[in-house]
Image (cartoon, rainbow, N blue to C red):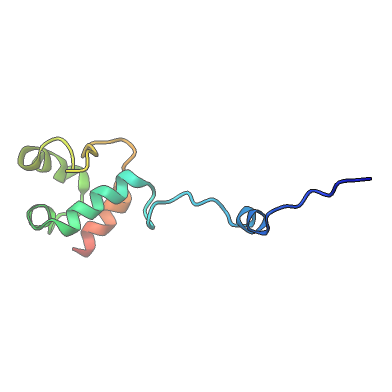
Length: 92
């Protein structure tokens, strides 16, 4: 007698959903984290407002707030998508 293997219907459904490669709409966690702090912390917001280049803002962020966000992401982390941050800065 053959045994039939029953599968969980949720396994089949979840296998059909593509794996996400972004983080809350941002390229990755590091980019999202920097964007979150720059948009939601009044001091950081005021420091970067009016700039369109994240790279230009990094030295000032490091002097005023230290080498990283309060969550531990380095302002100069190579994983940060600076093009996305630059786009966000244009909207501030």
